[in-house]
Image (tube, rainbow, N blue to C red; front, top):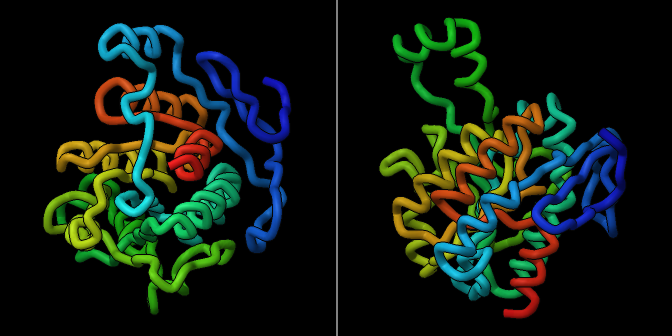
Length: 251
């Protein structure tokens, strides 16, 4: 591996490693943030191009009907993971751009759930209790990681399942329906758990899904890229932040 700074976009692959490069005022972030070295194999791009005649399914979006969904960016996850800290600038850039264009920004936090025998059996009692309390307590804005700037019309919701779109476990789908949202931009952590679950369920509910490759984070590049490949093949587009910002700007 080699260290790079900023986003390097190459045909078929995007590699971004090392310390993050920040622009402007994005709040207070740790200086040890990292971005995953993410990639979609050329064969996956070719497969979709052969099927539909283009690399990406969604070549444009309507900002007023688009929501940036930010999953689980709370201290429990962000403090423990430099990759989660590394995506803070990209999430804030997307939020600022989409909000300014009339779109929706939705911050989704883990709810404190009831203790269950299955949870104790699967995770072990101590780990299950830890995860039950991952989202913290108190007013929702204060439970987000401190590096974000929120807007007055932003949505803040809790989810009691890994997915923000699982029926009956999060208010987000109903709120988005009220705003006539048809496209969701999936960001946050953990890529291969709650973010992937949200992308899958959003697709099932009929949303146009775009997973923002360098605005999601997990513990390892391998796990991150496995999710990106799955989403790109079966559930939605995978695009870097710069591409999504361009889609919003040129709408």
